[in-house]
Image (cartoon, rainbow, N blue to C red; front, side, top):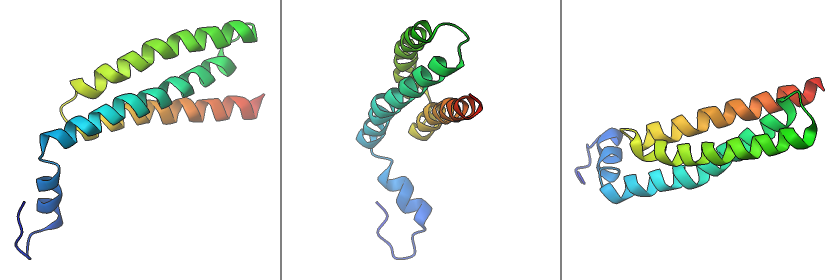
Length: 107
């Protein structure tokens, strides 16, 4: 790490996250925590959005959520950076949550 007093914040930030184990830790957390959040919001969205019987909508949402959680784990380690992994998982999570909120407000 650059220890000169005039080192910019960007240089210090880059030096800290240049360690490979931090990238792996961040991607692992994105896969585990982000994948769980994505799966949960996906299941919620499908449960309120599908125009079928409620029990069938919940089961369909849960089945899709299992596949989506696996895809989130693959995405976390397939992207170029850990930041892109987090953004790629949290953006659809936020959209599912927003869609669920809109659907529930309209019902």
